[in-house]
Length: 222
Image 1 (cartoon, rainbow, N blue to C red):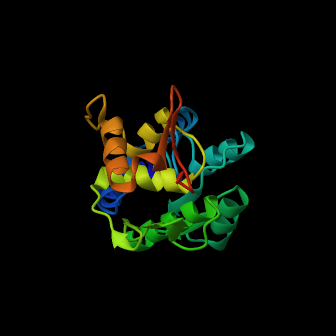
Image 2: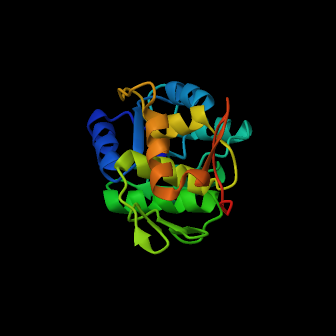
Image 3: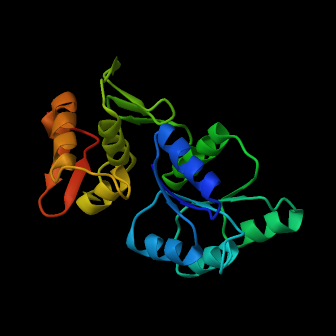
């Protein structure tokens, strides 16, 4: 899951970025609403963590603008404003969840996973595709009941493909989900991860759509 954090407190923002990466997320951190608006228009994110008290322009204004543009990125407001009217205003503006500081990181990560599941129409953290089972909380997968040994990045690629089963995932979107800003990677890193997944799943499970991206099929050809 790729998450954008919009938080002007440098200590908290840096801590969230590190903590969410330890929880298995791809986390990017920005400190103001204008930079966040640009990032959300040019990159794909699975969720947005939004502070309300931002410099120059507040988070509520950014949220209203995103929703007026038709952007459906799940938004979790994370703020020190705990008054009832602030909660109501945030949710009415289009937020999907609201948490008050201070908070516990495991609960925040769990809420983000729940938002992601709802976005993809999932009721549970476990996704079953034929004989492939993926547990998005434990971040592990099993094929025909046997656990698959996966690196962190291999799991990230697999989770995105499974969450969009039988749909083509554009290469650029997949790359942006798996790798955050500032991560140094080899030019063929994504292809290497897909190759490794095919070796473990069977090469017929992941199709290459030349010039577009990749597709995980629900029923591999016999």
